[in-house]
Length: 118
Ligand code: 5GP
Image (tube, rainbow, N blue to C red; front, side, top):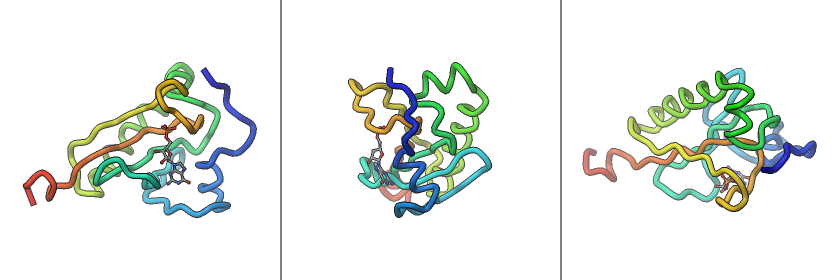
């Protein structure tokens, strides 16, 4: 597993306003971005404001309440986009395609329209 970097991650830099990125939702401990390279009609990222945890394994071991909060914020953010059902994905390790070692949950969903319910 990778170690948390002391260099600010791309997500930390967006949170600080150093690089562009629209924050869709923010709580005391997490924030939500739209993925820059969407893999579904709705593709959000739920990100802890701390970059102390490189991946979900490290996060779950040290702060399970923060992990549970990420899941609740994922539900809320998906609902704001009109999706009650969604996929929650944590790429874990470079071999699984993880590229940003600041833990984040991918929230993937279709819209009601895509499902033929619109
Ligand atoms: P992972 O590390 O889980 O494989 O993926 C990182 C995700 O972050 C990718 O889906 C990528 O598109 C997204 N991403 C990388 N850089 C940026 C950025 O500057 N802004 C936003 N909104 N998403 C980004």
